[in-house]
Amino acid sequence: MFGTRSTTSRTPRRRTSARAAALTVPLAVAGVLGITAAPAQAATPDHGTGPASLTCQGRGVDPAAKARYRAEIFIQAPLRTIWRLQTDVEGWPSWQKPVAPMTVKRLDPGPLRKLSQFQATIHLPPNPPAPPGTVVITSTVQQLQYGKCIRWTGPADGAGFHIDGTHVWNFIKVPGGVLVRTEESHTGPQADPNSDMGLETWLSDLKTAAEANPRD
Image (tube, rainbow, N blue to C red; front, top):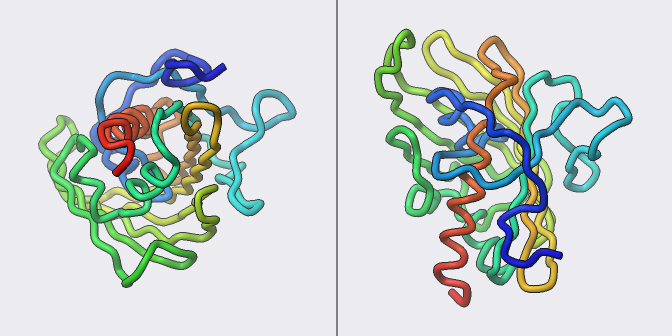
């Protein structure tokens, strides 16, 4: 069923602006950054049709958000490897491919857990008509179940720019590896319903990093 396909479904890839992709970095909001588009499934508002939104301990993305995206990928690596990569937020820049220079720092010590906070700073290059600038994303882990799911929320702020985001991750052990599912919602003046929020690239980068050192 899961074979070697990177995901289980496919929809047309959505465009990702530099600002939207940057957002997707850590934030609840978040995603990250570009490689080839892995097959994925776009999220749609739940009106009784389509897949139910992802949740972590009963909480999901913002159901009222017009900007929502969902994707998934199959990774041939142990769950412990994937979990370590995903929860070591300060290590993200070492295996992700950001569209702009990015730093990530924890705002509290210890392993990632409920109420942990982390902050990503993205320095955006000129992207006419948008001027260059700095976007700061401050995320708070709202729910976390070890080896199963993570949900975080937080704002992304820059000059004349604000988005509130919610990001949910699910990790499901399957024969031969792990199915990683993620869903994100954005609200605010700059929220783009046509963006994949960088989730396609984030998943692709996570797969590459985890499969490169499956027993790490």
